[in-house]
Image (cartoon, rainbow, N blue to C red; front, side):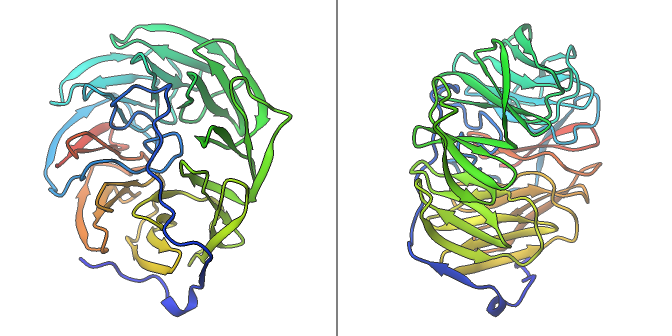
Length: 366
């Protein structure tokens, strides 16, 4: 199925002062080497871009129950192919690449995001029990620290092993599972160009790290943050537009969006091409103009994932995992047994993993 346009292309204005901006993703030194998908949206910049060709087959390779509905909990993939995913009941499940269960631990509160895999293979998990858990590769909860409020986000690990996460719009960090500090007004973190990128309500700022230079912030854009490339090119939602700014906040290009949006969820495809999550679909935007868009007729709640050839994958509340190639042709629409609010991850062989509110983790393709 070809993509259908949600809008008249002539009504969408794009402007550019800089073409081809893509810089390859950054693997934070604090994450596990060679892990194909060590954190939400793949990397520290949140680009959502895998280095391999993703699934082109609609075959469900396997499913495995996690024991409760999954909600926003999302999978990550370790260097040995082990997949980790949480659920609403506080269970973290480890799954071998063949779909067999490695272990499951249920000593946490509900998990509402993706874990992150540290350099030593440990899994960092933020939980509704107001703790950052550090789980070893055998499933034992080795350490952790308590916060003053529920932790309701995914975890990002920086170059020095510091974990960043959010407690009800308060930005928090913990150095290698140690004491938690929550002193920042933040809804999202990223790391690129040697800086911590901190997204407030409508302001994007960068800070030095190791330790945090909280008095040395640099405002680089106004808007809701989406992702940042290695060279510091950031993407924000501002006044109904997708905007790109360089590391110093200099405006590069923008593109009007076809729907009222209050958050920005993106994935970076080929040079100068950015997928934007729309309320009920996805749009491929570029500095030269919109490329294509599709409306699937159901709310898209999770993040987007893009493979090395520009194919995009996402779940929707109609319970389907969708895949579209870089030209906008539908690859598949695979039905699960419940709404999908989880975000996909792409394994080293191109298998796409995603959770569903039917409580199952799905492996699709490759």
